[in-house]
Amino acid sequence: MSKLQKPNTFLILTTILLCLVGLTILAVAAATAEQNEALQTVTITGEAKSNNETTASVAAIKSKEIKRIKPAHPAEILNRQAGVHVNNLGGEGHMTAIRQPISTDAAYLFLEDGLPTRPSGLFNHNALYEVNIPQAQRIEIIKGPGSALYGSESIGGIINTITEPSPEHFEMEVNPEFGSFGWKRLLISTGDKVSKTLGARLNFNMTDSEGYRDEADYSRGAVTLRLDGKIGERTRSKSILAFSKIEQSGVDSLDFDRYQAQSTYNRFANDVGRRNVDAFRLSNEFTTRFNAKNKLTVTPYFRDNQMELMPSWMLTYDPNDRDYQFQSYGVNTRFGQQVSNTFEWILGLDVDYSPSTYAEFRIEPLLVDDIYVSTARTGRTN
Image 1 (spheres, rainbow, N blue to C red):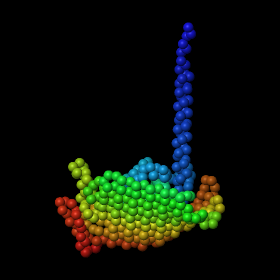
Image 2: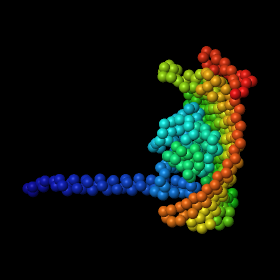
Image 3: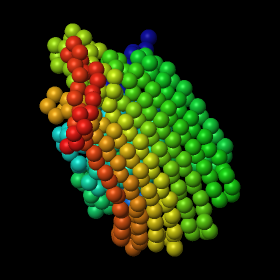
Image 4: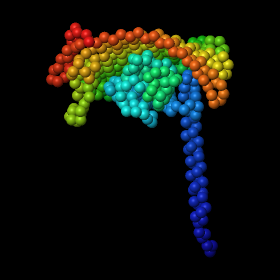
């Protein structure tokens, strides 16, 4: 009878170790490939760069993730990024915190395809609701200052939403959604080649919700039209028309006791505390590559923005009704030269003329059972 041999402990441990090392290498390779794919889509100064070509801390949210999440509020997609927090103030209202405490300070710059959605000096901490985020191709977040490249108001961070380009062939996508508390949304995206040198894409977003709290209805309509063209051998054009209409009811804060007793309670009824926004933007970007190293980009643009706001937080001590309006006429010009593989210089010139108006009207609110049910203008202006 043959003798059973004692297992070689060293050989077994060595085999297990080699297997673990092999699995680790495969996991790292897969993660690196995925990371490199994401990094190549980061847009710095208007063209794709990888993160190892910039000192900025940049996070990119790709189209696949946006379509999978289909965010109903900017917080649902942005809060998945490290160092970024966006709260929910009702509807699509929000405040932002990127590597610093949350506030309404003008510390962030919101862009659409590299262009500010608002002019300097007219910051709105809710301004992401003026952008059609659920149908974006990509969202880029720059954590930290970026004023040298993007202009003022980018001292805390930048959120750049990239529109989806026109397709090479006809495509159409329809996404109807229904949910609790009267939630309804219809997302439509379609596009095709118009000619050999011009393509078009049209995105449509219609959202309506009653909200889980009393008198907390919210609705938005958004249309984004993008045309991608080719002018000769060296010049490419990108035209974007974007319009958003938001109608949002006022919602007050709840203390702990009230929330425990009646979480749906809202002290504002009808149009008290309302916020109505119309935001229109039109831009035409022309990019000419003189050769492999020199590129010129010129982008004329126009904005028209109107907002009716009744500040709900002021009803108890200074009740008023406000009308905001501004129009912007501007051009963004940028010339870049790639001197070497490790050095590039960029020269830019921005011209922005944005006349604006602001009117404030004194109002008298009416309370019934401690609920604000209506307001009336007194005829006095502040």
